[in-house]
Image 1 (cartoon, rainbow, N blue to C red):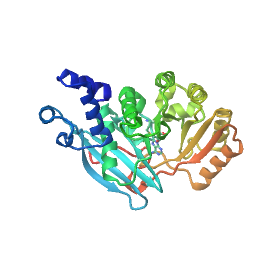
Image 2 (image 1 turned 120 degrees about the vertical axis):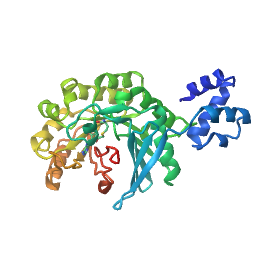
Image 3 (image 1 turned 90 degrees about the vertical axis):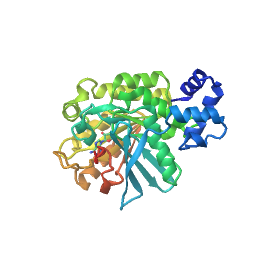
Image 4 (image 1 turned 45 degrees about the vertical axis):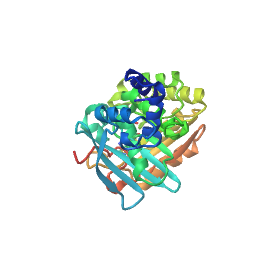
Length: 335
Ligand code: SAH
């Protein structure tokens, strides 16, 4: 529940709205495990809550630390026995947590492990927030960034994801700056437009992944509905309105979207768009797609750099590759 819901809940149960604020802070700011610990609530209210409510929605099933870097993959089980994964990545002072928004995903991107699962259901706001509560409690390094880049399509679960992001941003919640919360979408145009219209301040990332519609449609069926041009247009609108760079993600797949021609086309498409391009060398899953060799990756990036106007380019080397914690590798594998 968010603050308003908690306040209403308390009022419906004969308590003041202020009790709702207290519950909110105990759960999200302090991350207590039990209602008993909420020491400024009356004993009788605590008892009533303990009998009728639960504040934990996830159980950690497995903790898998990488041997090559400071990343940890967590496998959570929900109350209805579904599995989701979360990744914590520490790099110097930066601690980024990659959250899941759905059990599985409906989008069917051909190169993505979560896509292969199909969609089981949306996560609740509680299940999204619980992932972060768990990481904050068990990994000492303070959390600096949150990315909705785990399992699922965040904009297919718009309300719960935004509710969770608001709790992360709230000074009485996790107190994270809006610029440290990134929502990555496959490119659902109506929700991108809603996000812009609602004046949401979180960072927006759009998974472009190809420079030509014919290629994008092959690897991302959603492209038939909302093609590249629409997404670039929406991205430009976001960056113009928010004065904040939109991020375009581009997964490099060998022989599919990694040629010089692809890079030139991409440079042309994004010319004069205030954006960041995140090139992600493909994390293999044993299927039909493979990662290009280092030379091809460098060449692709160099072409982008050479034609740069308006955008910045970064290569994102996924962490936790030995524990299948890289982009697109999350699939609740124990399940
Ligand atoms: N559904 C959202 C967020 C989840 S995926 C989205 O599509 O944006 C986060 C990023 O990982 C996306 O850019 C996606 O294209 C990329 N990705 C998926 N599978 C991958 C893989 N196997 N290797 C590298 N990146 C991958």
